[in-house]
Amino acid sequence: MHKIMCLDVGTKRIGVAVSDFLHITAKGLCYIDRIPENQAIDRLSELIKDNKVGELVIGVPKNMDGTEGGQAKDCRNFAELVKSNIPDVKIIFEDERLTSDTAEENLRERKIDFRKNKALVDIESACIILEQYLSKI
Image 1 (spheres, rainbow, N blue to C red):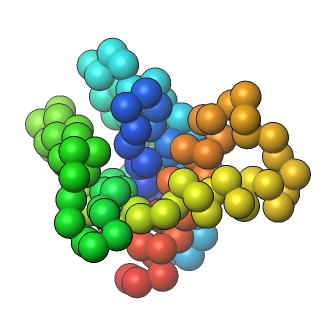
Image 2: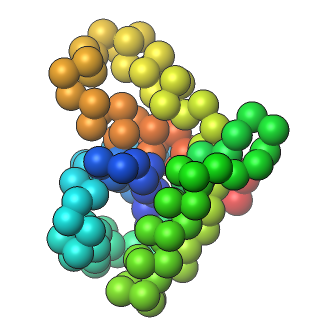
């Protein structure tokens, strides 16, 4: 049995969420600084090992018409870097349109002030992307 981890890959930070072993729930785990990327990959590798992760869902920000722009390409490039350094984990891509807006709304509803800590939005976004993926499997 393994867990599923999800990444919300941004230019500065990577939000991380993880499922339970039954793949029912998603929980925000942490964020990783994206730069320097070699340290981000090392930290991600540790998290994958520590959490017994077998699958890695990576959010891809698509445009509203379904096309992919520069940020989506950046996420796919990061996924290639992950795959070349952590070959044992299966990578799955998930559409992450509007998750940052939903994450901010969720945090506001819970009265969590994220304005000074944007990493909270990244972590919440990773949870939303993972929940979306889990609902389909």
